[in-house]
Length: 230
Ligand code: HEM
Image (cartoon, rainbow, N blue to C red; front, side, top):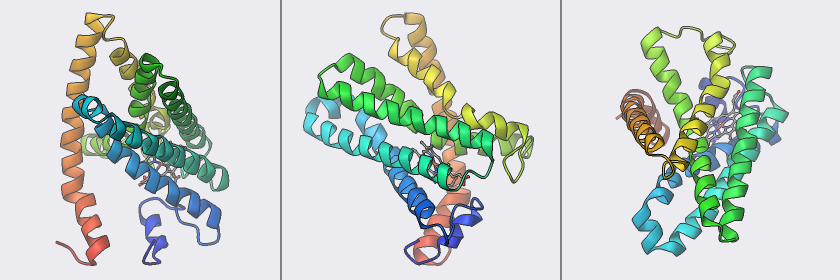
């Protein structure tokens, strides 16, 4: 974008950059910037020693996190309204649902923290985190699926059966895991199940992240900054 090569976005998804539609371009650009920061900041907020020893830092990053969630959510929703998604109405609805839930969770997390209702703040923060990592899991789940099945149920216009399933499958299951984690203090079974599930998912995500970074994104990012391969 900074080099004036917005068209290059469309190599990833057609229709992402529209030179004649400044609002949609602005919305999706803020969306991607807010989303990237959101993913980077989230894990910091979960580290207990950081929260305990540096509460001011946790509050500052928390405000930034909520603002980025607003930017990613509102930018995504504005893009859906202005341009529509590549996958048509089902994807518009699935993604809009994701955006609305993200905005609600961000608002609740902030509101309860301000009012000092820490149990509620904690529960909503876990839901918010589970939702935000959905955008990462979406890419991972697609990547793993492609590697395992050779793009079964996927089309370039995102209207295959797998694409239809994925419009909600990247965030609704996360909320189930979040509820198990929130309730883990009340039930030992929920605690054990949630921990095992999170460990298995984390191992898979780590493997997929490494594979994609090494083979696709890493070289692309280096090329974007330096103009040459490493
Ligand atoms: C952590 C949060 C998020 C991040 C990091 C993120 C990241 C991205 C990125 C990088 C793209 C560009 C296309 C691609 O590479 O796949 C994109 C597209 C998009 N995102 Fe997000 N996103 C996030 C949250 C959301 C939310 C909450 C919504 C719902 C409002 C949303 C809706 C969209 C839409 C509609 C597109 C365009 C899809 C199309 O071209 O058809 N995203 N997002």
